[in-house]
Image (cartoon, rainbow, N blue to C red; front, side, top):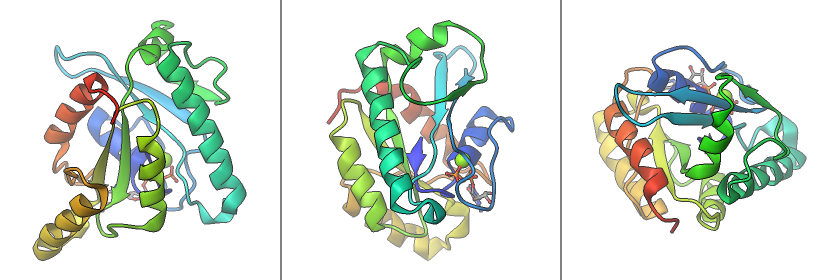
Length: 196
Ligand SMILES: Nc1nc2c(ncn2[C@@H]2O[C@H](COP(=O)(O)OP(=O)(O)OP(=O)(O)O)[C@@H](O)[C@H]2O)c(=O)[nH]1
Ligand SMILES: [Mg+2]
């Protein structure tokens, strides 16, 4: 999960895990490290949800955006090459002590760009999307905090998001659980797709 600070990455991971595993905050810039959470739904495949630090955290300014990009790039390159995450440049807090997490991450990854569904088409999100599409892994876009939209806004923002990113953009809410079933399906299938 990647996205601007405060877009709701950690909250969405908690909603998907149905546990409060990731720390969230009303103030942006909460998540500073890459955190891995192993989740499994019923008999579904074992999945690691990776919570990455947000970009566009104002207090960190440009330097922090550059650092985010450097670390994230290093992470994707490693994960994709199958060499694992041990010296990817990220510090990590691995919730599951299982050593196989290394292998697991080396196998197949998918990246979801989270954008706030209230603000479709932000410059920083579009830039992140362009950059993500050049990475060697399949990626998708999710609109967060849909509970904050009126019915009319949902329809309009949904159209705007799809036209900005040029793919369907499911809308979800960590608060109400809306859209999470559909999101799970995407999470399970995304890593099997080939990168755009
Ligand atoms: N109404 C509503 N609020 C949400 C939702 N998801 C997250 N929030 C709120 O948005 C704020 C930021 O959520 P986080 O999950 O910490 O955001 P983050 O993307 O992990 O932020 P960083 O770790 O700073 O990058 C918190 O106050 C959450 O309660 C949602 O679906 N609906
Ligand atoms: Mg966070």
